[in-house]
Amino acid sequence: MSNGQTQSDVILIGAGIMSATLGSLLKELAPEWKFTVFEKLPKAGEESSNEWNNAGTGHAALCELNYTIEKPDGSVDISKAGNINEQFLVSRQFWSYLVKSGLLRNPQNFIMPLPHMSYVHGEQNVEFLKKRYEALSGNPLFQGMEFSDDPGKLKEWVPLMMKGRTFNEPVAATKIESGTDVNFGALTRMLFDHLKNHNVDIHYNHSVKSMKRTSDGLWQLKVKNQESGTVERHTAKFVFVGAGGGSLHLLQKSGIPEGKHIGGFPVSGLFMVCNNPEIVEQHHAKVYGKASVGAPPMSVPHLDTRYIDNKKSLLFGPFAGFSPKFLKTSSMFDLITSVKPHNLLTMLAAGAKEMSLTKYLIQQLMLSKEQRIEELREFIPNAKMDDWDLVVAGQRVQVIKDTAHGGKGTLQFGTEVVSAEDGSIAALLGASPGASTAVSVMLEVMNKCFPQHIRAWEPKIKEMIPSYGVSLLENPELIQEIHTSTGQTLGLNSELNLRQYTSH
Ligand SMILES: Cc1cc2nc3c(=O)[nH]c(=O)nc-3n(C[C@H](O)[C@H](O)[C@H](O)COP(=O)(O)OP(=O)(O)OC[C@H]3O[C@@H](n4cnc5c(N)ncnc54)[C@H](O)[C@@H]3O)c2cc1C
Image (cartoon, rainbow, N blue to C red; front, side, top):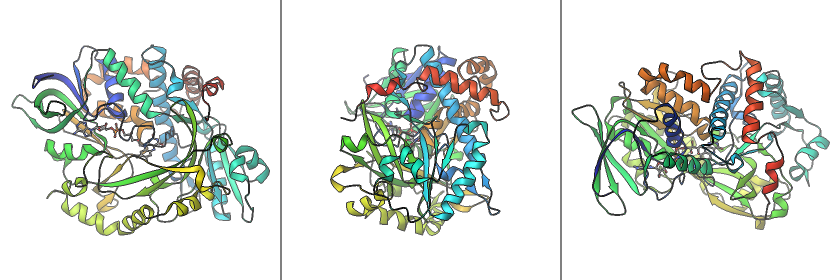
């Protein structure tokens, strides 16, 4: 395209999993609309959604201890876990619909069955894990979860983790077979291929610089074509800012009042990846531990079997860190340029409140490879330095805002949809639980921004996502049905998928 101007019904900024999901949902609901995508990088799914930049956990709260909170009376609150599990089942249903309709092929290229486990040591932690197991296992969403504090059983479940371990304190784990490893990078690329085949205009190497409202209520975007160096102007009735870490700056540029008083705090990440196929072969699960005291929830350590690049791999991490960039590929000035007069007080309040977090992140960043291996030895007692390399993961920009509960400048660990009152623009901020809940989060965007269409779209949404509008907890028979049908379509009930992957 030259310095042409286009007019679209929908512009999606960013080619990550969120834009891919919203585009794919809307394409089914309003196929006659004109969709345009602008992505500043040369390919889709290269930032947080890339398989090497995130942990690939299909977050269904099967193993993440931070989704179940111990209440002051000692009981375990599982409401958040139930919510996240239901959201993942929504994603599974939409992915199954796409596979069944022939819009996505070979689901084993983006989702694989993998047991999810939680692992703890120390008396108090074992007691918590047992209570958590008791609370979850009675719930139909978590059916099939097992608990064991028997070292013999744990040797069966995770031999690599038990080899060379001295059992001088209690250890315990839970295991559930219905977990998954999701290659969100592959899924993003597959979804964009599907959109491209269905007449969506996708422009790579196009960076959105700013946007403004036109007198006729449209949004006009100023877009730099990075190949030709020209500046283009494109308009749309609706804009989705799915720019990941780039979303906050673009939201600020939109000038909508809903985007004010919000800040962002970047957290970087590192994984260790095993380069020894013999070690890789000895482990087959995602095993989540407990975050150390003072650590933010997203730095919970885990040892994961992963399926990436047609290969079985083993990753450990993430180690959190601090970098002022909001995207892996963006500028060191991101943090400073995100501070505006309207969010200055919010940011200052967060700075004062979160000193210990900043200190923790900087300490994490300064860890030597030996110190990181020491952390890995909590999981693999015999881990050897030479078997492991470091890879840099994606950036997560945590939302900072003023809340009634936390006061001024409160750091949020979830995702937030910020939209204009008239529904003409929406931005997605935050990173957790992230890609796993993309379908539910994009349904939220649609409810907020297209209320005039939702009723007419409902029958099609229900065809794509049979549980839409239904509480699964109140309909336990539907849970089983969804597990079975999506498991069949996505190949999660079969070990056959595993055969194509080697660890070499
Ligand atoms: C270390 C780590 C571990 C994670 N682990 C998990 C996990 O196990 N499970 C899970 O479900 N989620 C996980 N997540 C979260 C998940 O990766 C993200 O929630 C998800 O990928 C975000 O998708 P997105 O589309 O919003 O952003 P991205 O994938 O970052 O895509 C945004 C796109 O916008 C583009 N862009 C930015 N600015 C502009 C601009 N001005 N113009 C044009 N294009 C622009 C970028 O280049 C990028 O391609 C993890 C994240 C990290 C960092």
